[in-house]
Length: 521
Image 1 (cartoon, rainbow, N blue to C red):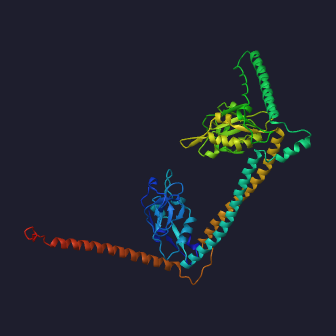
Image 2: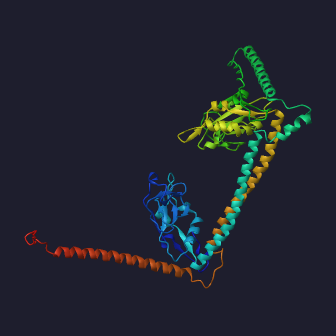
Image 3: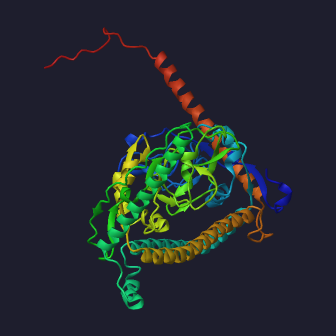
């Protein structure tokens, strides 16, 4: 509620119905919208065109249905305003139209919105809105001051937004160049001179990876054989240990666009496992932490985004290990599907069925390098081609992750790339975060400007201005005169119809006998 005591003495408070006539018109169905014609405004501003209009002049409207309830728009001249927007019709010419617009832009509509499943604003709800009214000259000064200050703030926001966009482009270019070999081109040139030997060729690198995979498998077999021996010695009291799966063939893909020391392989060939997550419904406020799907975003994992599984569930095979790679299987937003993040924690977390875990345990492969590379270049392009959308949900399968191409280079170069990206992206993200904070503060400044404006603190009062009470009295008199004239016009029209009907009833009708017959000559 507005406290009249806090307002300047020349101001008044009135109800929104005292200075406007909220109305709604018939809604034009989306299928009936046209590509050209008069603009049509709905719940989200301009939504299309139609061959009719219901307003010649610009109109002030409030979104009255859906998630955007309470948004304020001004229509263009000669526009059709749909029923999803409440139009404030017949605002007096005596008032500054934009004063009311800016006041409602700053207004909190939450207490006049009804409905939960389908939020809406009704005419009944609008009756709760009171508006502080200054003298009309002060309204003009307030609007001029708001627009001057907003212009300055918006120019600053535009510059900050441009800088943020440019940093985002730099970030993308940095990642792109990293996995095309351009970021470390000079480092490769200097390597042989500095170390007295060249980097391993692509063939040598493949042999190193294959040898590492075989050594890892041999160690798994040795551990399994010992486990089986222990199991037999203990009388086979538990299930027999499962024999490790032989690693898949390392499939080499086209790498002709990359440096000759680099290779592209199929992801499955370097993985120990690729597995979907746990299909259990989270419950309670304690137990085992299970990540939400929203915890995984490209290059980052939010460990604070989790729920709990009841402690009664046995989930050891789904516990994440440090260095595991997590991919999103499904998401309502396509750009979040198939993105990868690295699990770096030593705490116990499990992952849900809408995520896929991949584990790579090779000395020749740095998992931080994979976590960067699997989100860009040929890896990301492959995933985007594999995304399928059904019933509003976009997704990929574990099979898609297995077939994904992966760019690899020597371990030394991987370390250089990760170190460079960590440093430069950290600096870039820090600057972007600072810019976002400044943009937020600039928008809050606009809110502060509006807040002061409608407390009478933005511009000085002029004692020579006629008080708002005179303005409202004049508006009231004009509305009453208009209503009286409309009422009189209706009465005159009704009387005219009645008189015509009476005259018609008194005039005798001619009979056919009285009618003059004219014969043709």
